[in-house]
Image (cartoon, rainbow, N blue to C red; front, side, top):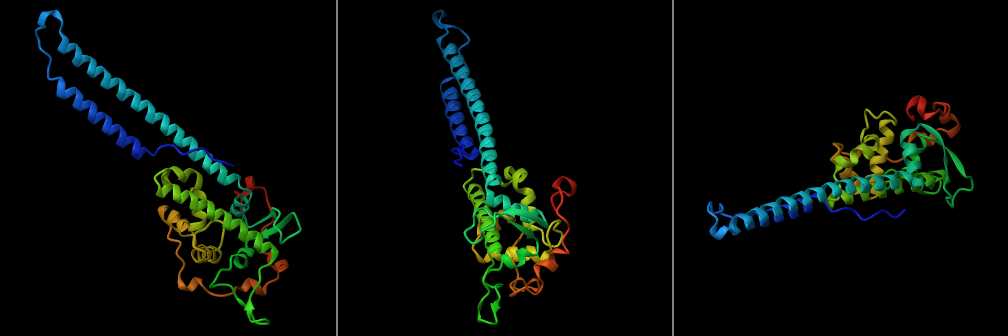
Length: 271
């Protein structure tokens, strides 16, 4: 979905307004020293010019205010449109569901590595699907890196797409088109789920730390900056870069028995 052209940033609007006000002030005060009390030949030319210039100043100032208000409204609409595009992306939707739910049936979105149209997701799958350079274990039978399962590739594609789109928001922030405060009503909850490790309401610390390593090792630096703007340092430590995971020793069938049953998000908030 093609988004509209972004509005002018408030910084440039303010600079333009100040330049205009300064010029008008110069025009008024340079030529409009207090008008003569006495009218020469009944014309009062000087006084009329002074009043006309002053009125022009206030009219232009009012027009500038109206323009800035219109730009703010356009800015708000543009931010809403950009975030709507983010949440409407099917792969982003999948990634957000995986962050917010412990278990859910999700679409495979036509991934070439899997024939089924849906797959059953459980949180433990993130520990293996989000292996990265330092955490990917070596298969002792082949002495080669462990290969990814089809469902894990679907998960990786979805998270890559979400991180790409979050980086786009950080580019907007860096260019001055939007502030993190303006994005907070839309992205704040999801940034919390990425940035909280010990007190995360949806995922274990181990899963969140695995996510941080993935973000760091695959170069999503702007995602790290965006999280930092909301008070979260998601830089992983050396202890987070450990190969393999106990989940490899547990069958998915056994792991599923520890998961809560799927429920309506209106009942438990999505988890």
